[in-house]
Image (cartoon, rainbow, N blue to C red; front, side, top):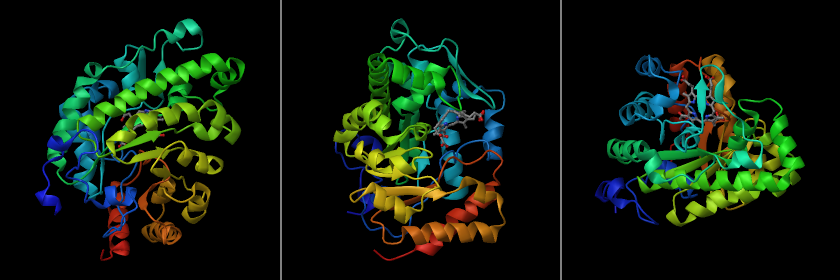
Length: 363
Ligand code: CP3
């Protein structure tokens, strides 16, 4: 059956259903199936690097824009139109489900998420109630609109992983050393485990909403987990992330697991339950494949700062990524972390074209 014969993604949601995006290079690469070209998308592709994003966001606060389906749809589609990327990522933020259950938090421009009253005691845990689909009706609505607009282009849903969410909640904001977070993790392992378990349930519920509404894949962002040693990750964090992956396994949509500075954790990130492991630029993809082991695709891993170099240098570095990925069972080209806000959008468009033309093959 060709992609055009498949019914639309919206009618085909639910457990193990086929979707209009099943034949896309992105979904096929996640599943380690042969592809006509290496698929490309960029973390933070929707955002401040695009003038059209800055224009539609004018006068609307970040969290408020995440709750407006019309804005979410427009912003999510902008990089797909401009760069011809192989997947869209749902425009939102990792703290949206926490705001939706009533936590007093905000996203401060140039700073990031800030939590009015940090969560550090057993009594504080009570503020973390379960997430119900009705708490995020705007997400269901926006994903539905997007799936209709995107057709055969996959939409990636996402959520923050329990550790990275816990870091913001316990610290009260962004943190370099995660000292309060680690103090809780080492000092009160029982309370820590309960905190991560509650966050796992909220995260799983949030991902389910996106998948049920038609998302073709999900990515769990554990951006700050590279701060941990492998033994601590395995003992204190992995059970919660595994709970999230297990909760959405039955849908059959690819599950991507991403973190930064995770060279020593790559094997465990796969073991936690992912189909695809995201890799930053510090470990070449062939070495990452050895660390992750067989049975999982890889996503990455150009240094986002490379895009500030002249075009020839960008292409040399992109070719290095593609060379290291040669022979991998599944490779999705991405940056090793998000697009930096002052990146020239034309450099991103050229990079997509470069990857497409240099990986074209017959399947
Ligand atoms: O295009 C996409 O990737 C989708 C949008 C997206 C945003 N945040 C939009 C956003 C995604 C996937 C995220 C996830 C996110 N948010 C993560 C994990 C990914 C990563 O980068 O590691 C983290 C750690 C956050 C927390 C957060 N939210 C930070 C650190 C910031 C930046 C603060 C700043 O102003 O520099 C935000 C705000 C945010 N989230 C912006 C965007 C586009 C910038 C706000 C704005 O444009 O006004």
